[in-house]
Length: 403
Image (cartoon, rainbow, N blue to C red):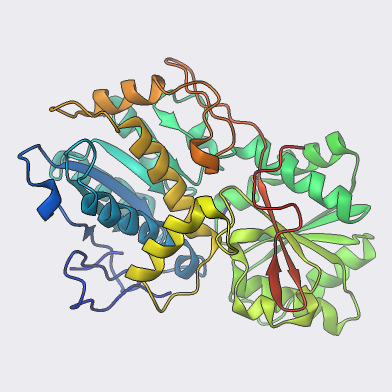
């Protein structure tokens, strides 16, 4: 079986863990199904089937995004080991759309019409989610969490964002940029449409917080060098750079700038930080924002996540896309904690709207309020990570920062 902002390889085999069948980085999309039954969920209640769709291969982002669905699977297995959701076992069905809108729509239709999912959880389909946004809305399928940084999340009451949407993300980045430098420049991915759409909002956010604007440069993962982009930002006076690109590309660009004696401060998406960045002196002092809790450290409220994830994927180095997946699952699980005997998409939507206002789900989200008939409107609270002497740090602690 194959499966798998603007923004690990998946397992080839896990014979020792029969609850999962995943293969994300192959040449074609497919599905992954989690455990549907468990000895502790044998009371006869129906299985709750949840769906997931994402860009898990065919792009420089895929190897990092895939940890979102891994975290969902880890949550499913842990939930089932505890008896499920009010006695209902949970099953995960996931597909890799490879960044193709047509495939994305095809797989979502399959999950809705053949797998009978009740919700899409933790989607990682930036830019392709718009291809199926109307379809799932017409079908009454809730979308809960995942990346919410594109237009698909605008004006859709059944789309429940568990973290910042575009305005909040841009403000959070520029606030951090202002604390780091005086004039911000962007390095934007050339591969994803939603990266290109980011410029007006980011420029507006820079003006709101009072940091200078040095413009944007587009970079492609396949480009042989980035001399021109580095020179342009240096000439524009950017003393802080925001690389909105995949992790490996960010390393290549920042290293290229360093060879030109251009070493700006770095503000980035924390989820993209990887081993190569930690070992690269050009990234020392970099800071990043995460829309979900930090995946490292010893915060007590993330302990269960870390234990469950590393048990299922012991060879993976965690990144921030993993906590993004777990965050989505935590919110869904809280809403369905008292799931009735019959669970439908409408059941899920009603349960989401019934969540107490300003819920933070044990620290896993910023304060969230879901109102029936209204699109999600979360604030701009984020988590802050840093790199110091080759180590990940939490310069503002492990709780969400809302200023």
